[in-house]
Length: 212
Length: 300
Image (cartoon, rainbow over all chains, first blue to last red; front, side):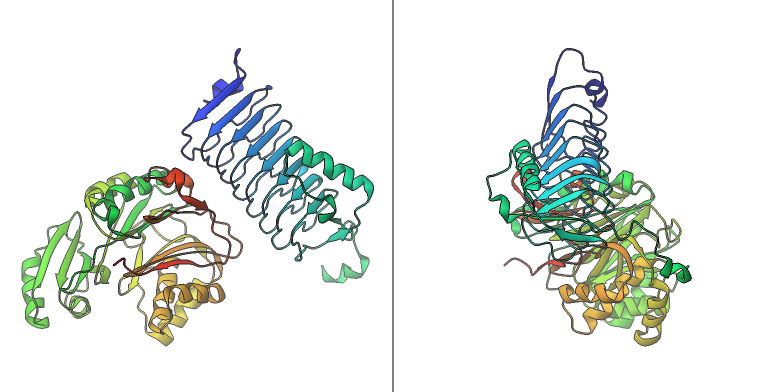
């Protein structure tokens, strides 16, 4: 299956039926294909995606769209842990909830989650954006670099070096674009709060030298 | 890695097919744990006492003499049934029988004691294990199973899951406990628990058994374990009428739950559940870290 998707001939629309939770479906794609998967998938679905649009009509196991470079991955149900981990580009939309470590070490992709995200989401995220309609679990954005986070629900247990920041017009514009790209339900942009790095972990603090 | 599965039937609908529904779930988890496999099957309650599931190291062991001695000692009839390498002894007082066996024939490994529980475990591929015990043909109310990729102790039948250290109680575990040695000492010193293996899960099972003995419910016992157990774990535990699931607060180990009007099913991965009836319309979710999910009670 993956071999066929990775070297497609003339067909650009695929539909995978009865995936039954199989692992690594639609991985390593590098063509402007549309792949619809009718059902729940296992680990690492649509990993390393480039260009393709992958739609999972169900839940996804761990590591969906991991290390995506470009393209779009949409999960109509829930995503398990590490959704969009280390992704460099493209858009991941999770219409349900995403579990722990969503967007961990994100490197430039955008992730939009219509539900909640679990603990340690955006841990060490370097670049890219995460939008959460629901609540964020503990330690959101721990050790985050220059990635940005927008949360509409509760995010009251932020990780180290992650703080709430002002929403300026440029951020509203950014959020508007992300929501439009994700086909998100209509909501008031002012319901979202923005979070990011306070950049205190960036620099070595000489006062701590004795601790090493 | 290890794979764990559980199936709890909420009403009569599928009870005759428990094993037929359950064994494909276990076999599907083979590549998470090809070293050994085991199942705890909870049969329907009967009025005539309990069972002891045991293994004798000598496959040709003649049970008749031992059973005659046991009957004389405990004053009750014992029915012997052989299933693969295991022997199930059914009698009015399973605890008295287990005590007798421990004293009289210490080389017998008692893998489960209870009113309804029968435990079968063996090294080898899950498909072979299921076949050797005839799991697919078993009826019952719920079942819990494990496919093992050995990490903390040797690949032996004794080190295989599930572990049962309490009456009708059984635990399967994916992960590893980091404070099992300290806890083992504590349970040995203060509760008089006798451990049979070096396995960390046996300590977890003994811990839960000790909490139940202290009057806690299965749900509460698992909540207690969040305070007393360190490490990473997904637990699936069963009692005579109960079924519960818990993931540690970091939730490293994968878990999926499914529920319909007829059953609750657990799998390390969704594919273990994909063969169940009406799974497409089941409520499916990933259990939250540090939250106990439990179902108790027999259907009327």
